[in-house]
Image (tube, helix red, strand yellow):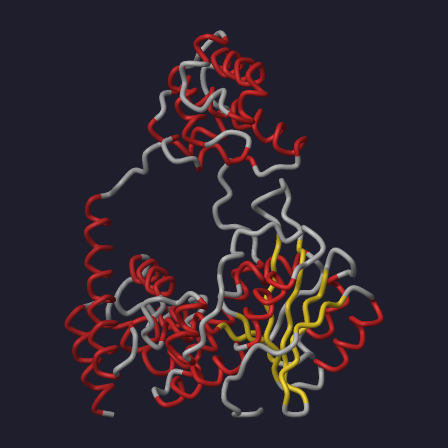
Length: 410
């Protein structure tokens, strides 16, 4: 892989035919690594659609940048390139990209995430523009972040934006990888990238109904939450029919206010700010009908009520968890300071939370404790090898201190 200095944005080639796509896939597959980014139209439609896939790779000492128009050709044709037999894929904040590509039939494997590397190397601002500026002195234009990428044709300014998101990723990856090697955290970054990729395509962890997740829903009385449930159902129906994101039909805060006031007629509906503004006003009769249905329901279905029940907190267990979390945080801080790395490199936040769960549900001397720690998603073999015994010892404060000292002496 070339170590040539970063240069101006190369020509951006648009791919709109299956033949051109097949040729690009064949050429990109010969590279050791490719940069990948995607754009969709989620801010403008009910169900987001993948609109473009941007690729960049190095060939014959030059950078090649292409924009695949996935409204003209099928993204699934990229599957051999993006899959496990293709080159290493370099992305920045891969979660959205991986999910969209997976849904389009071109799942990603062997991925490196430059936002993960930047975070573990101590960057406070990990957006692409900020990291490119800090590491390479490159400035990229982000004015099209909320653009409707289903619009055609793609103009010169749009192509420049799309190309800029991938043109410098390989150089950025090299710069960050060199620093990661120098700090001896490359394996930890690799483990976190793999975990992030698995999480991106996994089913959502929050399986609660949509209305339950709305801010303010938990504070509503029984009949109010019944009304909110019916209002959200009405909004979903309207949004799907209009092919719009639900928030563009009527906002969550307006639905909460309608659930609280429960207007019965148009005049009362008009007194709720936003209920008849813009597009929401077209559905006034639907809002009134939904409110009436919710009032008649009196409450939400029994299977949903569990989501509104306050959790029963055992004070002793809560105190024990805080104690364990405090020890875990202290360990992360001390080890990060000693090694001169970010705390996320020592133990990512999600691993720290899972570790607290494991320790809380275990007892000192449990023969399976190390096995449970090793199974924490995203922890990785490197961290377990280095810290497994210390993490297990956090279950008891005195043993933790002794284990930590012994580990460092060894």
